[in-house]
Structure formats: structure tokens, C-alpha cells
Image (cartoon, rainbow, N blue to C red; front, side):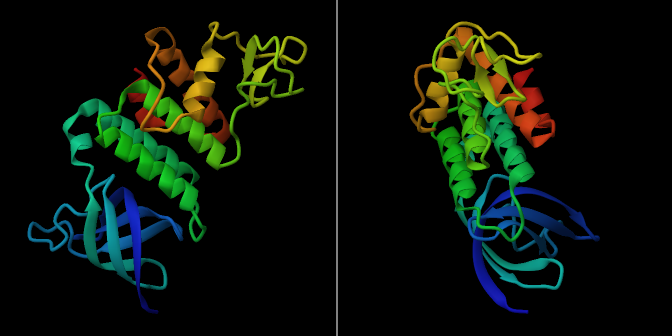
Length: 239
């Protein structure tokens, strides 16, 4: 057992005992970590609001056999503006829920951590809406190794005739390769998705209202298919 310094972004928390909470964070070096915040549910807790979801914190933890205990927490960034807007709160909730679904314990998660940090910063600086969520989910798919094929056929690599999208095959498919169940997408949608996947989260291309909603639907279904898990917060945002 030892004391160590760490940092992380709070994903969620839940009650533990009479006054404590288990706080689940994403650490760049240790992946998903579960820690105990002693007495945090008491009115006079020394942690105050420093361990709320979406908060980026520096930590000092005491390593335990099963759960580490937080002995000190210092806020790096609260992303306060995110919390003032319901749409941005739901977008942030989608981001942390998706990250929580893919993050592993005791595993280097530097790329995943930076993606979540950039997503929250983009939200805090005024970004929001469906395009940011779509771009985030497409990038998340890339981080975990299941990025959809958007510019070439997922089956044969052909660039022409991409008239269907197959979630099982991994993206756009051409007329010669389309499997049963492949869906026809609105003209221009795969190119729109490709532009979102390639863009910096803070500098997304101009939004197209005619394509934005469908783009998020495709990004959502693709990630849910490959995670084999429904994203509840995204269902609310998509509704």
C-alpha cells in the first residue's frame, strides 16, 4: 500500500456506506479507476463539489487492496459553462457514458483521456449540438479500433458506388458488396460523417441541418452496435 498522485476526469459516482461515495474516474495512465471519497455525502465534506461528473481533478490517493481512497482532490477544470445549458449537459453525459463503456482498468488510456478532455473543452467553449456528439462518437470508435469506413467500401476498398451503410460490415459499402440489412443513406451523408470524423472537435465544419440529425443517428447506432450496449443519455439527446 502507498500514497500516489494521479489525475482524472470524473465519469460518475454512487453511494457507498452511510456517508461515502465511490467515484469512478478516467486516468490517462491507469484507465478507469474506482476510488472512495470518505464522508463526501456529509454537508461539511472537505471535498465539496470537486468530485462532480465531468470535473477534471488532480488527486492524491491512498492505495487499498480493492479500492483506493481519495485523500486530496484539487480541481483543474470544472467546465462550468457546460453545466449551465441542458443540451450541453446531455452531450457531456453522452461523452462520459460512452467513455465509461470502453475504458478498461489498469490500462494506458492517454488517447481516450485526451479525446474526452477535448470534447468537454469544446462544449465549454460554446460547442454543442448533434454534430459535436457525432464527431466525438466517430473519434471514439477510432480510438478503440472500430472506426467506420466512410470514404471507401468497408468490404473491398472501392471508392465509387457507396450507396449503402452496413453496421455489421463496418461502414459504407458499394453496390457490389452490400450485405443483407445494409441501409440506404441520404445523398451526401457519408461525406458529412467523414468530415466530422476528421475535424478537430473545436473547429467542426459548418453544420447542415438537413444532415445533422441523421448523422448523429448513424454515429449512435454504429457505436452501440460495436459496443453491444445502448447509450441511454444519447437516446435522450437524440429524442
